[in-house]
Amino acid sequence: MTAPARITLPNDVMLSGVRDLLAEGHPVVITCKGVSMLPFIVGGRDSVRLVYCKELAPGDIALAEVWDGKWVLHRVIGVEDGKVTLKGDGNLRSAEECDISKVAGKVTEILPPGRSVDPSAAKQQARWRRWISAPYLCRRVWLAVLHRTIAKKYRI
Image (cartoon, rainbow, N blue to C red; front, side, top):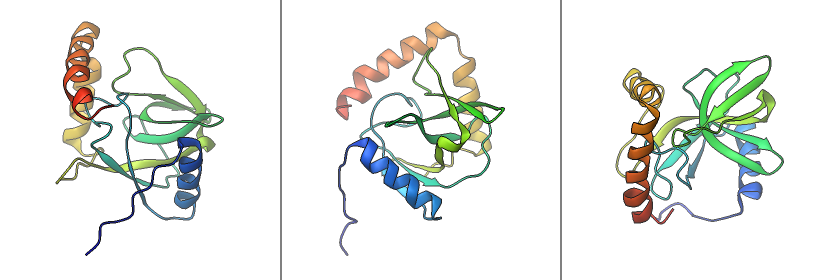
């Protein structure tokens, strides 16, 4: 059996194609890049399965175009008046806001090597709530350790 094809494209090209596939009802698996979702998603190692969604809730992980050509895979912090506020788990301060129509899909599975994690499972939601409620300094130190270990290992 042959492995699925792997191609690398610029984000603005690839993710607009992903948006179109999701809108047609196809689930899509993409490999993540970057460190903005540490400690829950490791760029360069983990993939995510995305599906089209009509409704979002705080705690969901969504793929959104926050401005022309700038895509993020971040956690939904809030949904209000047709706007979605997103923030990466590994971002200590910055958050993005976009129109809900700019959300391409949401993550139904995080795929670290050899396993599958449901981000909406009660256990995962509890881990996320503990993470965001931890004091700023604790999260900052833990992220610094992760950046020096995991991020270095996966060259992200």
